[in-house]
Length: 327
Ligand code: UT7
Image 1 (cartoon, rainbow, N blue to C red):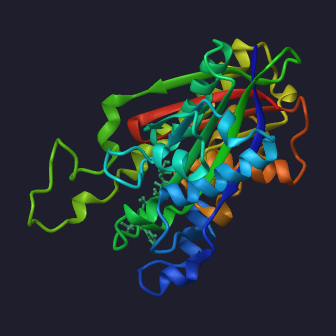
Image 2: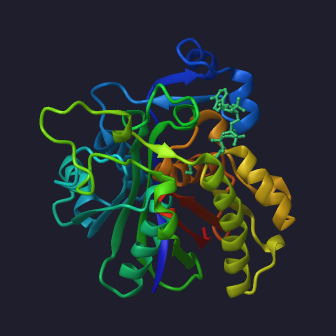
């Protein structure tokens, strides 16, 4: 039994915020942001849009593309670090209701920017084991609500968006999720985290949210980690599957920073053209970045049945990993 991607969809909010617009209220510039990250713009959710709103639209598009009805979905896996509610209920349950997936189980998956990679592998396991016929895997994020808009070293990096795939059990054409590597370096957890607001350091009633309730990052440390694990995961997936890089059509890395991707390409001696990027337009949308890219590539007809794709995620956790997909 294969775990084939039968439909993909995405949604990014209408409001597009350029670097120049950020520079009106922040001590930064288009030149700095472009030269240090490659980012030119990001899309920001409207005040009434939460993660489930973005995720439901992306999911409805993926369902339509797959031809699978909402009632046929057995399981919804929604990867997010910016849920509608703190911990409960899951954002997946909100999306399940919105889409009318009355036969589906629903759960959130927290692996930050690697969430979608973890979600695809979980869907792979369920479908291969015969426990589900159709799994909806969603990445939906509203980082604009958890970044510190006065911290120029982090807020310029992120954007909002959602992407989704339907993973269906199918018989033997050699297509689908072939192999995955899932990893975590928890010892570096505090290099990208929200120090306050969880059970480790709760925010007592009456106390105002301070900067420690927002995302905090040791950018340099995460940068070094990201470059090394991007190279490591590509090598592992190639080696384990006896593939040469020439047999891979596209690498779809988590869309964090162009400089990370360029450095990894150089270190692994892989032409930069193999890496699909769209961070220029959307910035880092965390768990949503890979499915948004897959949807864009699919619509641009870059992906064909049998195309070989590597998706590589890395971020808070520090979690990282990748999927080898035969499209
Ligand atoms: O999903 C994973 C998410 N995380 C990431 O992708 C982050 C990985 N890290 C990075 O991408 C990079 O470390 C950053 C883009 C965050 C920072 O780039 P950098 O080249 O490492 O800059 P830096 O932190 O070393 O800062 C260099 C200078 C500093 O000024 P001084 O101290 O040299 O005077 C910063 O204050 O750049 C300054 N700076 C800025 N200047 C203008 C930092 N952010 C900005 C900004 N605009 N937005």
